[in-house]
Length: 597
Ligand code: GTP
Image 1: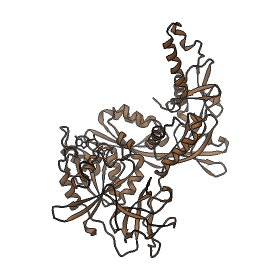
Image 2: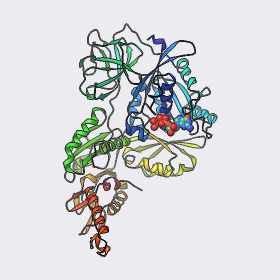
Image 3: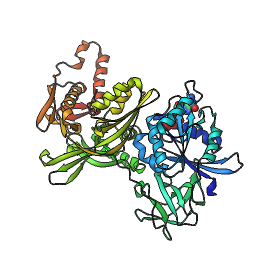
Image 4: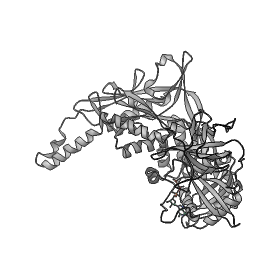
């Protein structure tokens, strides 16, 4: 393809502003798939994504479009994930294209993720075309939103395209704008091959599929390629493009986006951001580097039923085939037996993976307290990266502890501002900025990630009735007065409930936790003390009184069915419990005990 007829772009938007609907419309309008084949939200292929309405894996589609100038163009759309946990996947796909459509819901206006994503597009040097979606809604206020885009984002928006991705209004204008307002890529066909590895995933039939953007040179089937970061060599089996199904082509030239397969065994053998070149007469300098995506939140996953351990291992391995940013290492816990310590990009990533393990693989899991990665500086000068509070060294050997901090951006209607400030303040936040755009406030806070991983998002949603939007980036590490808090049930420490807390907040946390556990743990035939402790010092205590009567006692013996039902219920409940010494702790207790009100 003539490079001047190629346009590569992504769509940036806040969740729910209509990115997938617009992508589907563009595919439809260019006749890339017939109406019959058109499934709703074609680009979101995984079920769980469709259910939750979030896009996780970046995907690509090649559209062919005859413009009003009578010429044929190739438009490559890269679909990018919208959620903060996947910021790294967004940034790498952004570097593979030259422009972005900035989609803003004309009835909602700019939201936190709109900002986060559009700044990434600006950083990547994109030309940006603002698009106002949902103008069919009576609540749409395009003029106000244009002003807001100019004020808050600081880009020209007077010529924003007004569309309804739902009814199809304005879709033709979007296609024309892609051709006339976005730049074409640059690159030389006669230079040594430089292809950017944008993404990779495991396909049951083809093995590892690699998404590439050709910067310079040409890539053909049968050629031998070299991964520049590892020097690994592979013969290319197949190259092709997405329309949106895979279609094999003979070659890919500069400016093009496509895939290759090369009998690569595992996704782990491909490094996103790597430069692919030819084995012979290859490029000397790789493309400017990318950072690897690093897990920031860790938790333990244990099977409720110990005999499911092998099944859990298999399921984790299968999910890892497709997700290089999900890490897992075997772990043993005195209380929970064998399981895995897993690393995630953020809380949503954790939830998605846990959900898939439970639903697709039918596993009942206990999730231990999510923890961030602490830097423990020991008195001997060594630094330990602590992924699990259970591994905390003896306090006498610790010099100081640092924790990760984030910069959080929250957009919220005025009326809820007070509650949001209070929430951030309660979570040890430091206010960095507060500005207004229309009737919304934009607050920027420096917060410890540790205070955000449990339930910050849920709390934020509840205090703002769902009207706030939130986004964050990890900014660095900072020393603070952190301690490990242990929980003892019936005088035995339950390591799965250990957490790191700030000393000043330990007592309140500890009290809240033991009170919650008192409600969550059922009565037994004996008294159960529940205690929170720092080192050897007890900071909070509750006692569950002993159960005296049989549960069925109140049934007056007469009603046998009712009695049986009650006993069955009790049995079913038991299955979801784990024994700690003599005490049964229900599965939900592990997560719920950590939520703060
Ligand atoms: P994520 O995939 O979660 O990032 O969301 P998205 O931005 O892709 O949004 P999606 O396309 O799934 O649209 C969100 C909701 O808005 C869906 O219920 C759509 O039907 C609806 N929607 C999209 N475009 C329009 C529009 O132009 N008008 C109206 N009224 N509704 C729309």
